[in-house]
Image 1 (cartoon, rainbow, N blue to C red):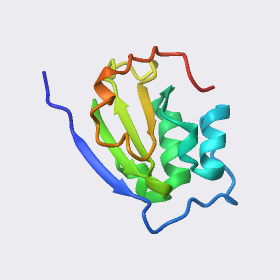
Image 2: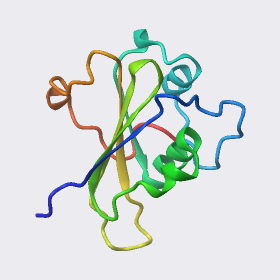
Image 3: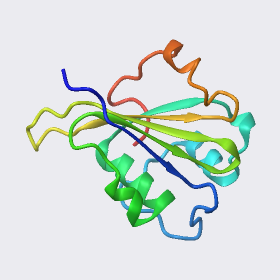
Length: 133
């Protein structure tokens, strides 16, 4: 089995372009909308299962063109710092090799204080197809 690839980007000195129109496959979920509006730590940890195209458009909206390029070719993990101490962790699952089958990604939105990772391994796995539209 191939080892996962890790990457890390930061939004530390940047604010997401909230006034920018969202890309076509931007993930739609009420908790995500609340987070992106305020980055309030009270929202708490949440996870969304999505397709690779949804994760690409989320990165594109948050980080611009540079975020689109930071993706593993197969499986792997990418972490991103978000405003107010939040962290986004994208876990890319192995693709089938069949271009007609979508690749899946688990997106974990980790509030400040939980970003150490100690609690992340205790959380349940998400199911493909559940999560965002």
